[in-house]
Image (tube, rainbow, N blue to C red; front, top):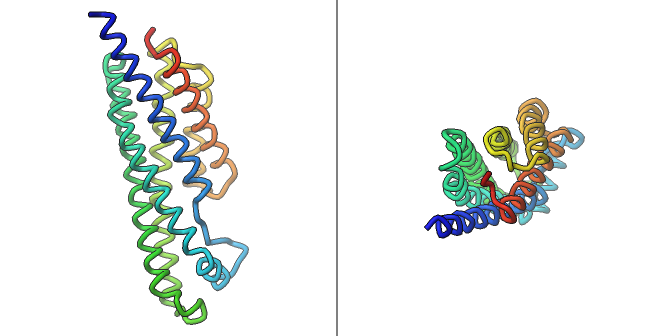
Length: 226
């Protein structure tokens, strides 16, 4: 019976590792496809001209973040179940952080799709026919989209911090993951609100994703039992 329970637990660990790896690669894809048309080095008219030429890219970016949010949501029960017998409360905190990240990116994707519809409805005649009111409406939608991006990323940073603390409860938690997550989590949160365009945010996000991959490889190959 004990052997059967262990095999069942190992299957759960493998499934959890695979779904989190899928979520990690989904984040990588969303970051690569992320659409940003506001630049401090261009005029508003140049920004809108760029948007009108890349409407399809903006839609793809929005769908990519929505898919990432859904995969993150699916990963929550898998994560909570495998830690339910090994942690008292930390896994619930981490699960809530995953839900927060999922919610943030869902709203971000929905706002992005609303902005896409606005573009389709108003850019058919070219940028020259777009009035000032629409300029500000698009900027407001883009600002809202980026706000929810920061919300989702902040919860991701909190999840990284919480997951790194698992090392103190489970001796077989990979050390390299602990270091990457505990350093990258606070760094991501800081740059998220201080300077979202800073390269430090990109480095922190990369550190979190690498830390998650190392954790998942360990989870799939050897599990987390002490």
